[in-house]
Length: 151
Image (cartoon, rainbow, N blue to C red):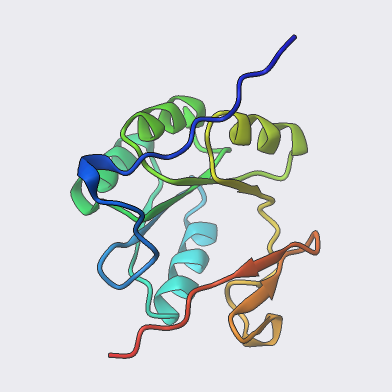
């Protein structure tokens, strides 16, 4: 069976590619408030505004109200597949979070720009795991975070 290539994220309204910045937040969608809160806190600690949603209606609301630069979507969220389709249809950039390799592969095929395991082992939260903005996830992948915004 032939697989279709993942659709590329197309910016809406001719905005062009927008990097993570202080002007556009990151939307973190997870049914587990503690996990989402840790990610949001770590991003905000680096000067990146972040918004947390724990239900699909909240996620759609914040995606439309805040025009996020990136959406981190926990695939364990209720109706995650429908939500992913909805957000991709609106041109949002998504990174999927799931510990199942098959689920991560599905997310990439569905149009996510990346798919990471849940277990990042503090890569976003501890300075010991990060050096010069480069962090390591639990599976050894290198994750580059933007520099903190000086204000």
